[in-house]
Length: 281
Image (cartoon, rainbow, N blue to C red; front, side, top):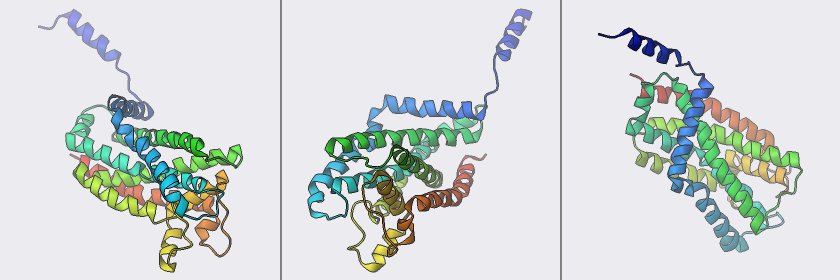
């Protein structure tokens, strides 16, 4: 039989359990993902070693043969590398969600008294933090090889803000793919075959002027090109485009904001539907 003392102990323990808010639950998920990264530091290779490799490879191997209107190819290149890194935030999110679903971790979370959305919010914030490490690493690498921010402090901060905003939009694409595909291997194959053409078929690494007309049109209307051009304009790393260029490149900052909002509005509903479908009873 249960004694009175045991009953009192159960009541006392129950009284110490307090309901948590969505933000608290999401922050716990953020810490869970960051602890995972701390215990497996090799997970940071995609935002540390890989960006540095791209900077060195393009700046010193291909840079001499690529002509730009910027003061140097290094200043032309760095915004493109940073744009590529933030676009690949979708890759990080998709791989993480698929791995959690595949291993049954999401099912364990469902047994806890937390909101389902906290898992997505926590994963998204952790992924942005993950990519931000890469932005910091590339900024320091760029400064070391001669890249400089020539715009004002406000413009520089706005440029970094645009990176995070665009990364937020790409997160929803990552959630959609991570919830849709069943294995991490499938995610890797799909994301590489999708994101690499998006980043390279743009003005990130080479000017669009020498491209054939049809290819140049695609590249200039690529959301990636708007983001990269906005970074170059705000950081003072390249000339502004005149009336003869595509509209997004004439107004890159506004175009980037519009693209980010539009991509979020398109991908978010499908991403939530796909995630709910994978995690529903």
